[in-house]
Length: 363
Image (cartoon, rainbow, N blue to C red; front, top):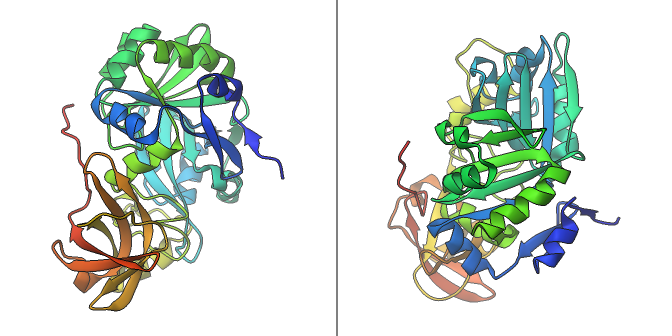
């Protein structure tokens, strides 16, 4: 099947992007280079076109109860303008996707989910419908520009003239008028840095993206997005979490609400899995010698294979290879010495605290 193309594809070509397939889309992987783009986000600001991701607007008197039935977190308890990370699970408690849910108004929400799971996410919401609910899929009508980095918020405000955005606290969101169109802004992201995720009509994004770049925001591709999220130990669906993992062993218990008296898809199974002790946990591993750990590389302890890397790459910030794996609980303590089989070479590595990198937070 032919790959889907971003609405701003021609603009990315003009910016010199190199493309690669991802989740059925032709996506910019890098522009100036992964390391340079990575450090731009850590030190200043970078912008990612992540319009391949799903954006499902759910509205009506039954929106809150419908989404509460569809996801693991108590999103019906959010105030308008608040957002939270959540999971979608099936009746067996298997993780179908990880998502962000934004409450825009009392009876209106936005759900952003992974590109590979757009259809499954819509079906999950439809399956959970309770009451009068309208579902509006705007993936084909809007663009998502994620502007991330210590200077990102100020640069977005300066370029757009929307200084009111600077008043948003972490995980808050707002819809404002911008050039006669509705612009959604949320103080969320997937890089471990501060910044905004912006959803706007794609014809508006055609002007906004170049304006951000002209102001000094670096265009960044999926390559840097992956190394950034890995340094922050943020899971990637299909690698670090999928249908065989539970929220508890993935360290995602904060995304599951079991004590609000509400039912949701997979709740009974998740209650059972939480009560049962788990024997593995998602763990951060850092190489202590040269070599690059990748997804699928066997992890050894005492010469025996004990796990496989779920993610792995080079960390530009740490100048070392880093990755994650589901280690037996008894081996998941920081300081545990391991080896990782990288194409037949046993690379020395050690367990380190999660995450690898945590920014200093202000407000």
